[in-house]
Length: 201
Image (cartoon, rainbow, N blue to C red; front, side):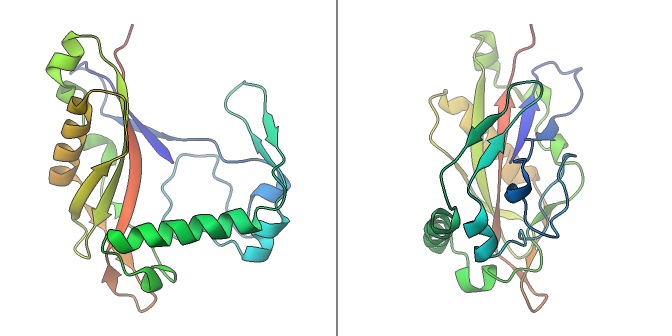
């Protein structure tokens, strides 16, 4: 997942995005999947088989100089299958063709610098005055024409003003190369990300 950090200073650089570090460990990556040490956006479904998922028995998580944490949940085969089933059930409510989505050639790809869709001077004024910070996790439904058709924010304990500005701006400004099905035809899909509102010290 990517995180957008938004600073309220109009003179600050545009919103930047940085990728969370990938899970490490030999068993955590699928064969043929490139290392994701640099920030990037996933442009095609991950190539990982059920057998590969089932062979994963531990995960190691590390960020920066912090000590790594190793989790040993056992085989990830059944949990990954359950997660996909849950996601596909949700997708039926989002108006997405689940069957076609299983064989995508490409997921939606942002056009241009998506860090410019929301910039620092659009920090909600009242929330800035009150010294409020927050993070908004959102999901955009992307139509076959590459334009957002819906925006939803996940449950947040932060003021609603953050959620409102994120969806208003993204619905108006975000543009994508649409997802492409197995036949090479554009279809509806989704894109999720986060915006973090930060007041510099």
